[in-house]
Length: 112
Image (cartoon, rainbow, N blue to C red; front, side, top):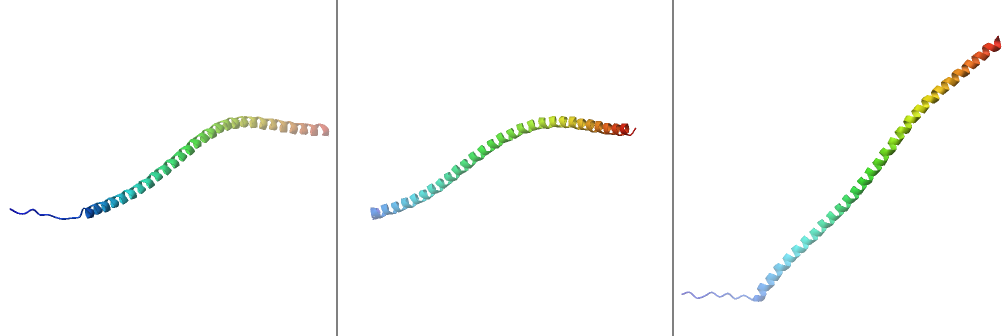
């Protein structure tokens, strides 16, 4: 029969090696945590920017609706002005024609 093999190792050395490995793992996890924190910060900033953009779009839509309403009102006012201008033009033509007829009549009547 063969004799059993015995290996002598110091428990402190094994524990120290394990402790070093755990420290390395902990450092890696800390780096990952820092990266995740940066990613979360970026997502939060992106969310804030999207919220601001959404608010700006809503405000722009409200302003656009207001402008459309005002344009509709202006359109009706322009139509009214168009009709008024036509009336004024015809009134001016009648007045000028009347004045010309009056001057012509006066000239012919005074020469006779």
